[in-house]
Image (tube, rainbow, N blue to C red; front, top):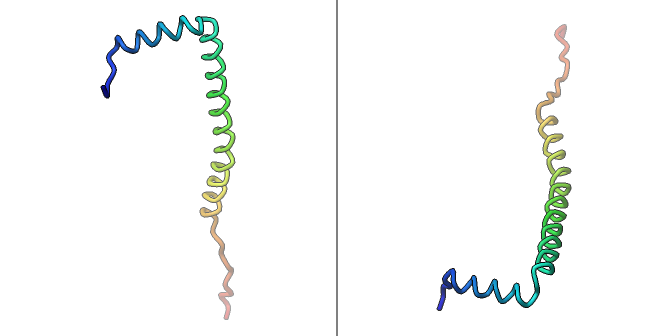
Length: 73
C-alpha cells in the first residue's frame, strides 16, 4: 500500500484530465510556473545586498592602517 505503480499514476492522471480538461490544466501549470519564477527572482534580489555586504567587508579587511613613527627621537 505504501508505493504506487506507474499504472496507478496513469489512472489518476486520466481522471484528473477528464475532470479538469487539458486547457484548465495548462493554465494551472502556467500560473504555477510564473509563481515559482517570481519566487526565484525575489530570492535573487534578496541575496544580492547580502553579497555586496560581504564584498565590502572583504575589501575592508585588505586595508592596512599604519602610523608614522618619528625616527629622529
